[in-house]
Image (tube, rainbow, N blue to C red; front, side, top):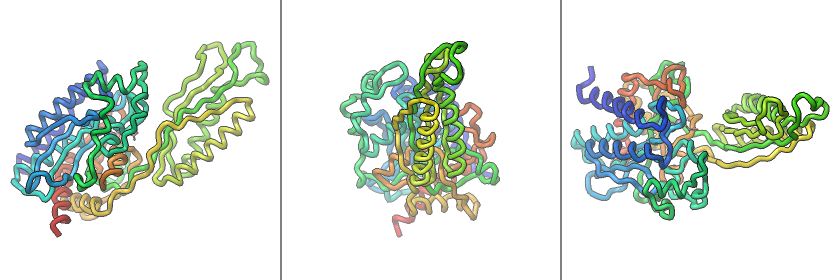
Length: 417
Ligand code: GLV
Ligand code: MN
Ligand code: MN
């Protein structure tokens, strides 16, 4: 049986996830967007929990919520633990949030144990991993990593609010978001715990995995243009139906992705003018394309693009491509990954499972400033995520917390060798 303090940490992490789930812009369901009033409330709540765990706290210039526990001596470089506090629309309660809550619990354990680590511990709740509001992901972690670009300030949300205005309304100075950048010498690495968001651990009957790499992703806004016309009066041989052309492309995206071992998702389709009795003149689709290796993903895109051009030519349609997001695949650092594997072994799993992450994570951006590694824990219901049915068990969360703590101690051991 686990000592009471361990159970308390697990229960508290889960209770905190439940409390965060109530901070939502939806009446029914979870949605917490970057730079929203809900983001502000979540940061304040999380800052309080960080302080209870013994950390000094601050919100950085990009709206990331940060906390710090000093190491053996003040001002040592930090091992950063964290994940994100923003969500997709109609989200689950664990994607991102659980990683931040477990990071706080690891700090709480380290402080209570009186251990003097050869580095400071920082916890960060990133402000935007999902990109739900402005369509471009990793805004908080890019600012942290020093790859912020002021051109991002002109991005707009669905209501037409620019990122610059949203930052002002949140209380940030848009001209200073780049000041959130950390210097490599202030950091020794970044460790993130996250639910797997897929079925592999559940299928393998394992609680935990070390992550080998994070998939590279490209996102496109695709437009097929034809000509609108009367649904009854336009004969088939004269139609230039943009949506039917788009449909052919969508089916081929799935075929090419399966064949190349990549993952292609068309998550948004809109037809214009959108009349029930009007041949669609324009179809707009989104494409999210991922692969374990960038060349594999890029090869799949080249085939999709070539196929779409052929279809559009055959059907007398136009084809336009706007790529609005690109993040290359990021391998986890060997030493940090070894520490994560040691952490998993400390829970009694002698042969840690290793998975590559199909989902994107803040570590992709953070890797520009410091080494990264990740620990995955099983999520139930077939690994469903980005969905309210996202679920974890307390036993798996307990294993993840033990492994996360042991991984931090393994990093400390590595550094004293
Ligand atoms: C983020 O969750 C992503 O993988 O899109
Ligand atoms: Mn997500
Ligand atoms: Mn996530």
